[in-house]
Amino acid sequence: MDKEVTKGTICVMGITGTNHEGEGVGRLGELRVFVPSTVPGDEVRVEIDEVKSNYARGRVKEILKPSPDRVEPRCGVFEECGGCVWQAVSYEAQLNYKSDQVVQALSRIGGIKNPPVAPIIGAPVPWNYRNKVQFPVGGRRGRLKAGCFARGTHEIVDVAECFIQHQVNNRVIAAVKKIMEEMKIEPYDEYTGKGLLRHIMARVAHNTGEAMVVLVTSSPYLPSRKAIVRRLFEEIPGLVSVVQNINSRKTNVILGPETKVIGGRGYIEDVLDGLRFHISPISFYQVNTPQAEVLYRKVVEYANPGPQSQVLDVYCGIGTISLFLARKAGFVLGVEEVPRAVADARKNAALNGFFNVDFVAGSAERVLPGLLDHGLVPEVVVVDPPRQGCKESVLSAIVAMRPGRIVYVSCNPATLARDLKTLVEYGYSLSEVQPIDMFPQTAHVECVVLMSRL
Image (cartoon, rainbow, N blue to C red; front, side):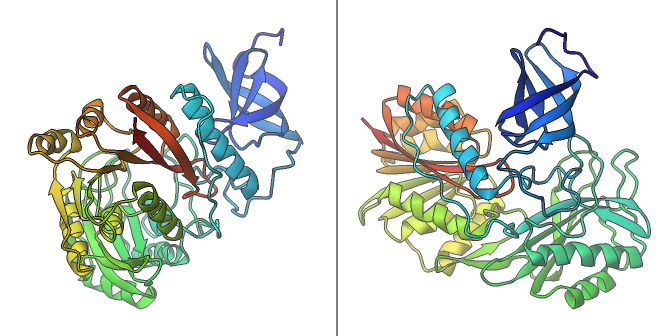
């Protein structure tokens, strides 16, 4: 393109790919242009909003020729909402883009030529799968709104029905809004710091139907608390737990340090592949329950523990993977930083009658060197870190234990590729990568990876 590209430039381009955030990518000469709400194969008229040295951002003015992969979004607020960016993409195409995202990350970031990526495992039902919702609350007393933030802003898009949320969660959001409006509870304003109700969080156990409501407030005092709890139990089927979380800080972090049960019990219970799990308000639990079962079975297949095997499960959360492994392994040790999650993991082990599993509370970078000093020699190490991946000290401690196999579970192909590159340098080979679509209608993809010691 000969014309200089500046803010406000109007141009026509073809969308040829996607980035890790699910935005369409086109080109103006050598300049990459990121365009939200576009699909590879679209021909679009774009207005440029931002120009940097090596890329630009734009917004669609007109779709001149739609991609063959484009479909009509289900959601009426899809264009505004920042929740799920790929509703306009056919599900088959979503799976193809996610597979390519994994291959490209392993190749470019990990330096792995022709990575052994298996065909992605898609979700049988790519809608209404999320068992957890946490919506910010805004508006004014008597007229609350709750939903996702508009893309790139902190403006709340009021959502009447979210098509990726479990229907019980949708019912929770509607019920809480109605009850809080009737009780004249004031929504929190993040700019002034005034108001009481900050977030509505809900969890539903996919296989048992038990539901939990968490009201995140800026103050411990909740007016009409007993009446609110009573009404919630009347309105929400399967409700067994109502919790108040107090977050008085001016922060974007959703949950505060204090949590108290104000109705029912403090947990819900779900079943995964025949195993029962207690899930507390702050515990990590995969949001797509049917696909979580697929994921954990693949972890066990790759780990392949025998009756005498010692297995180390790092970032174990409430012990889901640990207990799946304990059905075949001789002994499993889980490591988790969140003390409440460790307490839940121990309860879950007892609940399912496992005596060949134990859990240690502490950060992986602190605990693992100590385990090595005490002579732990696991045959298999499983890691399921947060999106930022593993710290170098964690990887080096794992390698020092010389496990025959490392099974890496990741929700971020970029940090996965970075860490696999490190493990290859330490003497491990990449055996197989299995992408699993845990998050339909979004650009996120989960992977299970098997590494073997040379």
